[in-house]
Length: 93
Image (tube, rainbow, N blue to C red):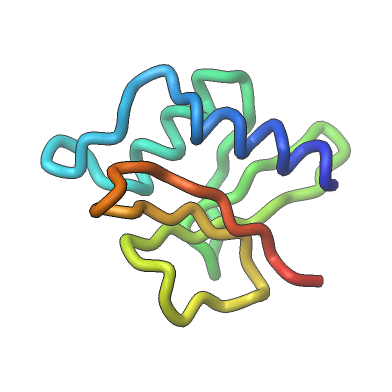
């Protein structure tokens, strides 16, 4: 799991296109970046989206424009508007 999250973190910190908040939502941008790198991105009922693997296992993600009050049950993709960068905050098991 840790290796997969590292790859996902590399995708969002070195994206194929930069995140431009005035053009697209963080959720749509993150989903595009992951699909562009070959990940299977699917609907998730209790999260913003999930990355599904051939084994059927899913990693659930939520997105936020602030790093405040994040639920530890999810992996988070967070936009820092001041630094103009995206980061991944993995869930705490």
